[in-house]
Length: 208
Image (cartoon, rainbow, N blue to C red; front, side, top):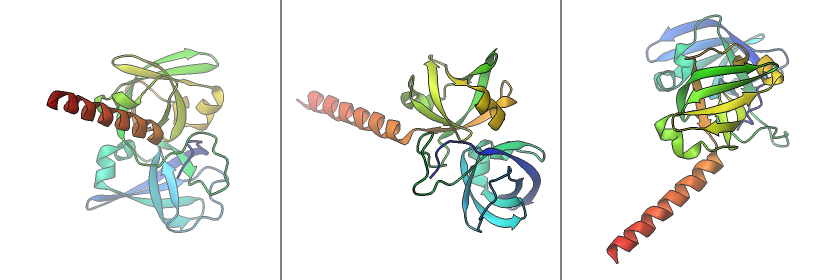
């Protein structure tokens, strides 16, 4: 489980290719490598990955072909930065919202509006995510817990404060960047339940 509070930027220091598998070697941000163990979970751009090797302040993750194809991890190159969050522990403060580290889909940045010191990012609205992206709702973008701003038929926005830009990849993001998207699980459960009820009700009316 994660909270969407990014702890800093990791740096991709090496990429090793295997058959249907890629190993990412990441230099962790200061203060996040304490008491690490093999098999521990760390979110990289919001994607939950398992530590397979520890080399000082660098760790390795094996990423399957499915994850490479369906997240922005497949686009990473040596020297790229990733948002890093270690798994939450019982008793930790939930500063953002509960996140699973399982990416729902990806989207791309469509426009950026800078109003110093803040920034508004607009992203394309994926068809499969439309029912779950609601104004003032929660969303996970590259593992960062954010509040949804405005929603149109084709886009949605999030507002970033300086702290978010300094701590995450959104400080250097550009138009057309691919972004991992995780919808809020509670929102999904409510929307799916309502849709299922409405469908069942409509079917009963048709039968009667």
